[in-house]
Every structure is written in structure tokens, then in C-alpha cells.
Image 1: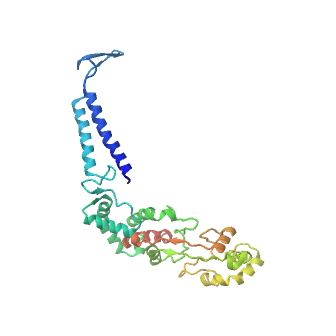
Image 2: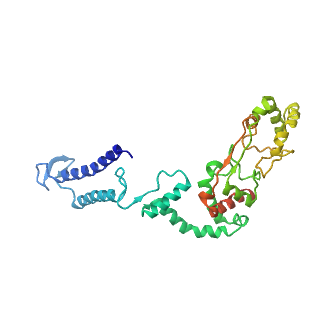
Image 3: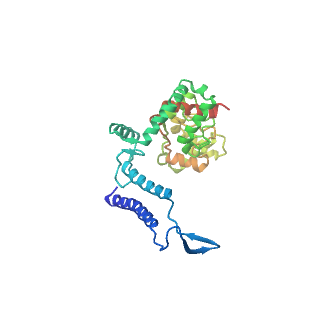
Length: 317
């Protein structure tokens, strides 16, 4: 924070406390010219105003709040760049990645600082760690039938996965539906956990330049025909010959390759849309979907529970 903003915030904050004090002192002084406890000239609907001072207990509360405000600003950060005598802060600021966060946490411990966010993480780890450890001892298939574990997995999913896959896990354009049985990298319990742990990186090459506009039309026609779609058969027949460059990933029969994450083109399930226009864009420009790596963020025990939840979405029906 610049010196200007440090001074600006400090002046406004301390000035407000001083202003409250001066206002209170002014209210406590009798400037009406009428003796305290005596009626004043104001009367409305038979009600006469009495010149009474502020209640004593009320005045004391005002003083307490002012003193507490000053004590707070001495102990806690708040006045510009002042960090407070207690060494407390809400979180480690300016963190750009997980490694920097870990380093900041260790440095705060060495310096004896009180970082609220770190304390809450430690408390959560102590409280819920044993629960996750117990769940981790069960295999994913069995854990997917545990209702309490499913609720925990659902909450973790909503917090970390729903931004891409949706709160109902049905995905969207470019984000797989996790409730069906169509899996790019395999739908077994082990495959799902591996995907969440290590992430995935889809790499569909761009074929527009090598195939040309006409070549793309032909390949698209053939790809759509594999799932039973009505297409120009002449284009599809020519596209079948060109499909040899696609078969390296999708297979000669177009049924995909789980080992490579290449989708099955015969089931009419399209990650980026199955319209002719969408498929043309895919073939022309390629696709590069990324599933983040979560092992360093959530840890294996939590991922084990999420894996059980996701596994149950498509297998426990």
C-alpha cells in the first residue's frame, strides 16, 4: 500500500474516533441555558421535553467502544500498512500458486504470526482428517454405496468440480457428463481416481491446413455417418479414405481409444457439440481440453471420496 493510502486511511479512521469523542463531550455539556432536570420550551401533544443528560451507562458504553477501537487498531492490522502488535492477519496475501502458499505458511509459523486461514485449515485437518482416513481404507466401489461418504463427496464435488461439470455433474460443451457411461479415459474406479489425481490433457490436432476445406467436409461427413447420421454419401465415401489420419487415435472403426483419451465417434455423444458446424470446427481447429491436477490441492484422501461419489453417479443407478 502506498504512503498516500496509508495516511488517508489512518487519518479517516483515527479522525472518526476523535470525532465521536468530541461529539460525546459536546452532548454531555449543558448548552441550553436550562438547568438539568427542568422542563424546556418544547412541547408537543402534551409531552414536555426535559433537559436531561445522556444516561450514565450509555455514556460509559460509548467510551468503551472508543477505547476498544483504539486497542483493536494497535493489536490488529487496519491502519494503512500497520500490521498490528499481535501479528494477526486473515490470510497470506499475494499467493500465486500452491508452492508459494506452503512457503508462506511455514514462514508465518517461524515468525510466530497468527494467520487465521492457516489456523482454520489446521483445525479442519484435526477434526475431519480421521474421517477421511477411515474412508480412504475402503475401496471406491464399496465407498460409493456409503450414503454419508456420498454426502461428503458431493459437497467436495460442488466446491471444486461443479464449476466445469455443473452442480448436477452433467457437464456442458467441452466438459464431460459424469452421469452416463461414456468415459474418454475409462470409467472404472481406478481410472476415475487417476483422472482426478493427475488430471488429463486432451489434444485433438487441427487438420484444417493439411486437409483443406474440402477435405474437412469429407472427413466430417464420414465421422457423422459413423453414428448413423444422414450425410452426403459421396462426401462420406471420400472421407473414409481420408479418415486414415484419424484412425491413429480413434481407431479404424472410429470407436476411440481410452488409453489416448480419443472419443468414440460411433455413439453420437459429442463433447464439443455434434452438429455439422461444431464437428467441422473441431476437425479444422482442433481441441485442447484440460482437466486440472487435483492431488496437490485436495490430497489423495479427499480425492478418494470424490472418486467414490463420481463413480456412484454412473454405476449406482
